[in-house]
Amino acid sequence: MEGTQVEMSIIVRTTTRFLAAIMLLFGVYIIFTGHLNPGGGFQGGVILAAVILLLYIAFGTEKHRVPENLASLVEDVSALSLIFTGIMGLIIGKAAFSNFVCRTRYDFVGAGTIPYINTIIGLEVGAAFIVLFYTFFRYMERRQ
Amino acid sequence: MNLLNGISVGIILVLIGLFGISTQKNIIKIILSLDICFLGIILFFISIGYVEGGTIPVLGSYTPDQYVDPLPHALMLTTAVVELSITALALALGLKVYEKYGTLDVRELEE
Amino acid sequence: MRVYTGIAAICVVAWGIIFLSTASLHYGLHPGDAAFHYIEWGGEETGSSNLVTAIITDYRLYDTMGEVTVLFTAILGVTMILGRNHHRIQRKIKQLDQLYGGNTGGDVDNC
Image (cartoon, rainbow over all chains, first blue to last red; front, side, top):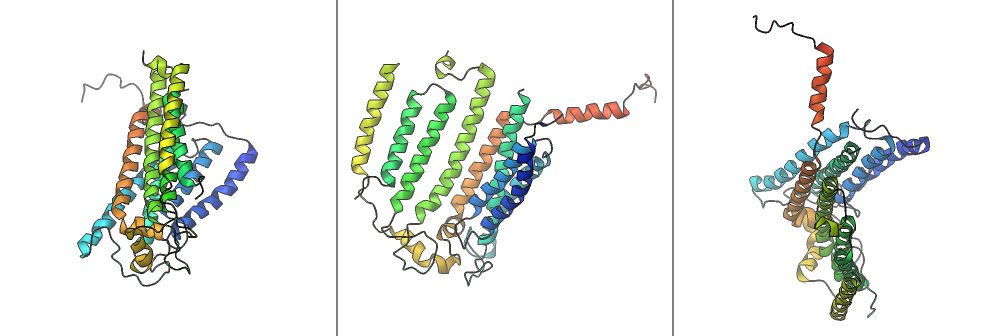
């Protein structure tokens, strides 16, 4: 069978089910309010990847094989869309890799392209970490 | 000025990492000593931009000369991600070396 | 091996004395010119309160793109070193053979 069926005790599994949802919400919150409070793309992406790592450790990698294909696809799409957002500034008429939306206030939508860049970077870093963890886990399982 | 500030601790961390690289025999310990070097450099750069009596670089109700320098913080974010990439590749190579030769000792690997 | 450890320790301590005596000369003073421009005009030009996020996503987005490239390449390298799952396709072929397989009866030549 692919993956491992080694799970941890029932206390760990119940606590993980409860904590994973809260950690996911916390990671998304840190990504989305990156331009108002300390945080941003990299920090939120690492928190999102830590959720999947917690699920790998507590439940074994057999039940959670789907995130590996999805994470690889998300990482590719995010890297391309970051470059596309940068070139878009050049196509419209202003400088390349800049903030080409009119910005007026210190709100969530008043910062132009900054929330979108934060989201793209958060998804990219999170997906890269998930692929890294999955590769290491599967290599160690295949060796024994 | 105080001698136990961030700059001194950063330099001491770099020196500890260098000492670990040059005297350890296990490959994993050498890679972790390299990691300690990187962390020392990051601490050194961030503590260079300190302003006396300053606060974090998030805009609030302060005058513009009470903020800590935000430029090293932004550069060290990129540095931390590059350091992660280097450590991941080095550890993957270390795993393959153990699979092929069966030992992790540097003196025996020179054959 | 004690000689090597002793030589390394002496070199590290000498290097430490040289570094620590020249560092912390510029500590706690005002930041440079570029950082002062970011602090003073960063809020109005980008519209974000967090100056570090404004630097890495608006003023220096090119460096962030380079760092994403480095991370992508490192993960690609680790995946290529440690091997992907080649046996998934072969296992699926074996599964399909067990479901629908059977001998052809030698009538492959007859059309």
